[in-house]
Length: 79
Image 1 (cartoon, rainbow, N blue to C red):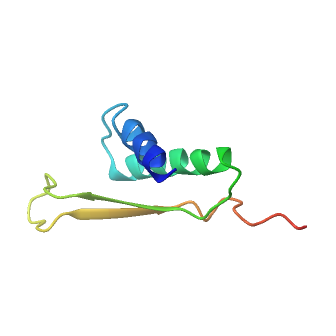
Image 2: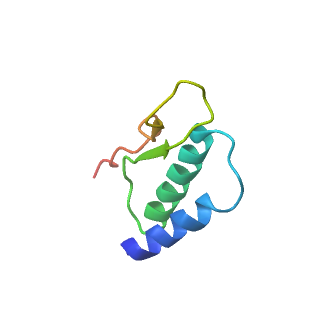
């Protein structure tokens, strides 16, 4: 199951070039959420993306962005 998830996320990240880390993280998070929902699960998901060498003068050590899907309805339904 996790191997399939990783293949899905890698394919999603490689579908097109992303200019913003935020857009890449959100797209990958959406794909992960869709994958788990197709399996019958609902989950809170966090995706972290790091650009190791950003083209920003004076920034060393990279830039990291974390996207969470917790603003969506991920609560369990009442029995």
